[in-house]
Amino acid sequence: MKEFKEFIKERVVRKQHPDRARSKDLIEEADRKLENLKRIITKIGIDDKNSNDIIEDCHDIILGLVRAKMFIEGFSASGKGAHEAEVSYLEKMKFNEEEIEFVNKLRYFRNGILYYGKIFDKEYATKVINFMKKFKARVK
Image 1 (cartoon, rainbow, N blue to C red):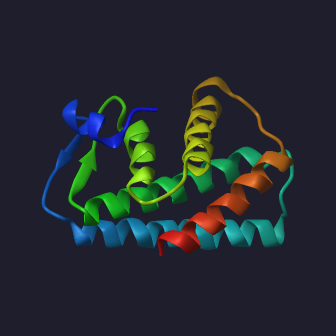
Image 2 (cartoon, one colour):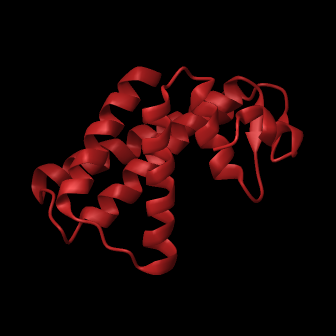
């Protein structure tokens, strides 16, 4: 994966004034998604039929929190490579290589769900939920 500074050079990421209001909105949306996810897990549980939905929600929560941090720090990613740039920003947030690779694979797998109909199982969904919970606790 490219370093974050490469995305700045390529203008996928742009420096801007910090946008605390947008950051706050993204955090609130991540919190809303998490509360909804908790209700689903409590009422229905995790199974192979809802694992893709759970994975997508966790992906959205994680990247929403990354975007929120980027807006606070005055960065915005857009266009081709924006999601990869957001994942690379995790290094600036002091995540280790293994954690960054996990999120990058999650990004890749989420695209597989959306564009190729890839199906994941309960085991992977559970792994993603556990990672997301630790991630959220760490960035708050």
